[in-house]
Image (cartoon, rainbow, N blue to C red; front, top):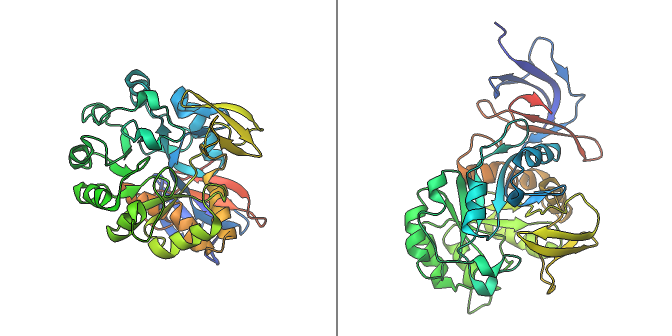
Length: 356
C-alpha cells in the first residue's frame, strides 16, 4: 500500500519551494518528499478559498436548486468550500432548497447561509419584502443543513431566536436598522458575525456607532464585499485596520450574473439589471455582486492589503468562523489548494487532494 495517495511537487508556498503529500484527502507532509509526483512547475500555492456568502454564478442561483452545477462552477473559480446562500422567500421555497443533498465532484458545501427571512422590512435591499417574517426556531434548524443565518436583531423575537439558534449555526447581524445597544444585546445572546458590513445597515456616526461600533466592541467577525463597488477601497483598508485578518472575512455575495454579460437577471424572484457588471434593483439599490471570491481577493490586494492577509481573510478566517478543517496549507488540514500563475490568475485547483 502506497504511503501517499499523491505528491504535488515544486509548489511555491509563501516563497519557499515545497512538495505536498496527500493521504485520504488531507495534507500528510510538506517539504522535499522523495518519490514521483505531479510537477506544479514552481507556481504559487494558496489555501483554497472559502466563500460563506454567495448566491450563485454562471447563470445559476442557489434558489434554483441545481447545486451540482454550482459546485462545479465554484471549484473552477478557486472556491473550494462554499455556503450557498438562500434568499428571503416563501417557507416552501426555502424548505425545498435546505432539504437538498450536498453533491460531490466540485466545491465542498459547508452548509447553507440563510440570508433572511428574519430581517428588517426597512433594510430589505434586494430581498423580497413579501416573504419577510418573524423568527421561527423550527423553520431552519430542523433541516440540519444551515451553517449561517442572517438576522435583524431589532425585529420581534430576534434576541430569543439568537439565544436559541446560536447553538446550531453562526448567527449574523444583517439587513438591519439596529442601533448600537441592540447589536450588543445580539452579540451577548450569541451573534458573532455581521453580514456584508456597511451594506443595508445604518452608517457609522460618531454619536450613533450602530453595527460597526458594536461589532468592534464585541469582537465579532465581519463580512466584507471587497469588489470595489459595494465598499470604497479606503473603507476596505479602514475595516482591515480595525478588525484585522483574524475577524474580517472576504465574501463575494455573487449572483447568477457572475461571469455573464450585462443584462437582466433574476435574484430571489426579483428582476435585477446588470450594467457595466454592476447589479441593481429596479429602484437603483445595489444587489449582489458579479465578482468571484478570487476576484475580491485580488481587489483587496490592489487596495493595498498584503497578499498573505488578503488570502487569509478568504480562507483561514472564514474556515475558523465555521470550525472547518481547511483554509491552511498545513499538515493535517484538508488538501484544498489553489494554484496561481505568474500573471496572478488561477491555473489549477486541488480539492481533497484531487486535481480539478
